[in-house]
Every structure is written in structure tokens, then in C-alpha cells.
Amino acid sequence: MEAWENVKSLFRREKITIINEHGVEEERYADYEPLANPISLCRELTLKNWVFFLVGLMAWTIDGFDFHSVSLSVSRLAVHYDVSRVNITTSITLTLLFRSLGAALFGVLGDLYGRKWPMVANMILIGGLQLATAYADTFPKFLAVRAMFGIGMGGVWGNAIAMALESMPPRPRGLMSGILQQGYSLGYLLAAALNLTVVPKSKESFKMLFYVGAGCSVFVGFLRCLFPESEQFLKAKAEGKRGGHTQQFFKEAKLVLRTSWRRCIYACILMALFNFFSHTTQDSYPTFIQQGKEYSGNQASLATVIAKVGACVGGAIIGYVSQSIGRRRAIVISAILAGCLIPAWIIPSSLGGLSAGSFMLQFFVQGAWGVIPIHLNELSPPAFRSSFPGIAYQIGNMISSPSAEIVTAIAESNLIKSRTGKLAPAYGPTMGVATALIATGIAIWTAIGKEARGSRFEQADIAGHHVEEKDAPRNKAPEGDLEAGLSRDDKGAVDVVEDIEKKH
Image 1 (spheres, rainbow, N blue to C red):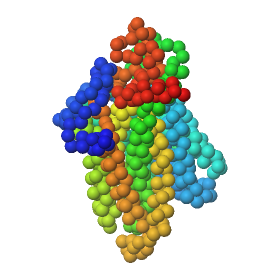
Image 2 (image 1 turned 180 degrees about the vertical axis):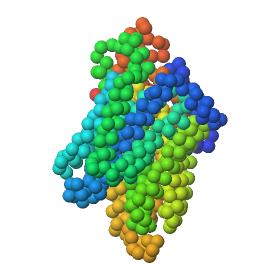
Image 3 (image 1 turned 60 degrees about the horizontal axis):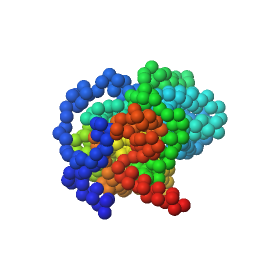
């Protein structure tokens, strides 16, 4: 059984199919690699690599800032619109639900027309919607704007990680993937710092968060205008693409779905588990600190900030380690260690103990997350590295969108004694049991999957762009070949698909 063989490969040399430096697929054994000096890894990046990486990191950081602007302003927004806090959190659910639509829209545009202009349009769009949020004068308008913001937000991650990682040398990718993913946590830290310092002193109150977010989003969009398109798309343009490549793109996409459907389902379930992992350990934790441990809101914010620092550090370190021990091993080990740290995360009574436990738990939760950008890029059909990871990520996000509501409903319906002996909602036990189940699920689901560490996916053809056969390099798909961008496993299913079509 293939799944069992994948599990056993965690404990031995794993045979993987990758794209080599010549753009040709080959099978090889993924050996352990010695940990390289991270400084030497950073030196391997060219100026262009750094520019693309930093712009992608800025886009993802601002995306995190913009999203958390609402969650940090729930009480103020409830007073402003004269509705309950529960009604305000509905806007967060709407944002999460509509992110899948944005991932599909901007992901397809990114794979079809290049990374540059879809990202520019995306960042300007979310900047405008942040500004519209500040000026929404009624609650229904506020909900409508935040739903549209979800479309814009959903498009950022796929294009940002594709642009940041696709032209990067293979050896630094694990380290840079971990740093890149934690832009989301960094965005929260920046929003929290502004919320604790500037917002209370401003006449604009919570609107300052949206003004700053709008300005930064538009700035990143214009900044992206100053730099060139990705090397792969420039090369395709220089070689000369055939007319009608849009139709070719969707033919290839259709074939990928028909032959890679198992990989698509695997990635969506993996991202659903990961998003449950993240939201279950983060969204209700401030409420747990306040109600279950009876600390103030500012103390809960402090504990959350410390946890986010742990997330940033863990993402970079585990992502870096994954380049040596493998993507799946890094994720499985992180999930298991996160599960082991659950008691230290919820049992302590002191604020220092809770903060330390949260720091360590988030170190491994977001450490596992730090592997995801490069892991999904390597697993993706090479020609669809913007749409495939983004859509899988956002579908997972959509599935996990009610996680906070589930935790809250269970916790509020069960009371336990707090540290002072008073009855309080059972947030601690609820989050602890849920996190243990999710961590176990991630470890198992990752173990039965595959990886393609070291794949030179940047050498593959881009979707919908084919050069004339007489000028095409020998590793590229010939005219009419719809198998561009498929893995060797996927191509094995093409004959089956064609036979079925002939019969019908």
C-alpha cells in the first residue's frame, strides 16, 4: 500500500520524483543533508532573489496586518455599530469564506499572466477595501466590505510565495520559506503594537488601523511595479508564446485536475488540518487567559504577543531544519512536540508560565507552518505554483473557518473552576483536547503523503505558454502536449483519461 510505504520512508531513504537543474523529471533518493550555515545560505541569494523575497514577505505581512485589524478592534467596532461582539466576528468568518474565491481568481491570473501585475492589482484592491472598511457607515456595508476584502486577501499568499521562492536557489528555500510564512505573525505583531500605542491616543480610534493598513497595502503594490516580472515569464515572452495561450492554459488546468485530483484533495485536507491547528491554538487563547485564568485584557495581549514571537522564531528554525531532514519529517516532529507541550500551554496559573508555554507551543505550531510554503510549491504541478498552493491553502482556511465558533460553543457550554475557584468556561480543556486531535491528524496525514524536496520547479514550463517546436529545448513539451507541468505520476494517468474519452 502506497500510504504505508510513505510512512516507512520517514525512517529510511525516500525515493522521490523531482525536476532537476535541466528541467527534466528524474527519480532520486532524498538523503539527509548536513545543516548549512544560515549566513552562507543567505549569501547564495542574489540581489534579485532578495528583492522578490522581501516584496513577497512585505505583501504577506501587510495581509496579516489587514486581517487582524478587525480581530483587534472587535469591542470598538461593536460599540461603533451598536451590535454585539458576536455579530462583529461574523465579518471574520465572511472574510475567511471568501478567501478561496480570491485564491482561485488571482492564482489563475498569476499562473497565466505572470506574478507582477496580478499582485499589483491585488495589493491595491485590498488597500482600497481597508479604506472602505474605515468609511463603512452601517453594519451591513461593513459586512459587505469585509466579504469583498476576503477575495482580495485570498489572492496574496499564492502569488507572494510563488514570486518569493520560485527563482531562489534550492538550498536556502527551507530557511526562507520559514521566514516568509511568519510574515502573517509579524503582521499581527505590528497591528497589536499600533493598537496598544497609537489607537488609544488617536481621535480616529480603531480607524487608524485601517488607514495604516490601506496605505501600506497600496505602497507594496506600487513597490512591486518597480521590479521586473519573474524570470520564467520573461523567458517565455522572449522565446515567443503562441497565440491563444489562455485556451491552452485552461486545457492544461483541466488535465491537471483530472489526473492530479488525489494530490489536490490531499493538499486541501492537509491545509484544513493546518488551519484548524493555527486557529484553535490562537483565536480563543486571549479569551482563555482572561476568563479561565482571570487576567486583564492587556495581560492577555502581552501573552499573545509573546506567543507570536515564538511563532516567528519557530517558523524560521523549523523551515531551516526541513532542508536537512526533509519537509515531512520536520512537520511530523513539530506536530508531535506541539502535542506534548499542551499541558504546559494550558495548566500553569501564573502569567509567566502561561506565556512561556504559549511561546513553546507556537514555536512548533508555526514551525510546522514554516515548512508549508516550500512544501506546497514542491508538491504543486510545476506550471500551477501560484494557483495550486493558494487555492489549497484557502480551501483549507474555508473548511476551518468555524473553528473559533466551535471552540467557543463547547467551552461556553461547559464550566470548570478557574484559578481563584470561580466557575468559568472550559476554554483550556476544550482547546487542549482539540489541539491534541489536530496535531495527531497532521502527523498521520503528513506521514502518508509525499514530498519533493530539492525540486527545481523553476525550470519547468509555465502554463499556457509553449514555444515553437523547432526552437523548443528538448526538455520542453512539444506542440499540442497538454502534459506540461505534470509530474511523472500524473502523466501515468493521462492514457487512462484518453481511453475513457474515446469510449464516451
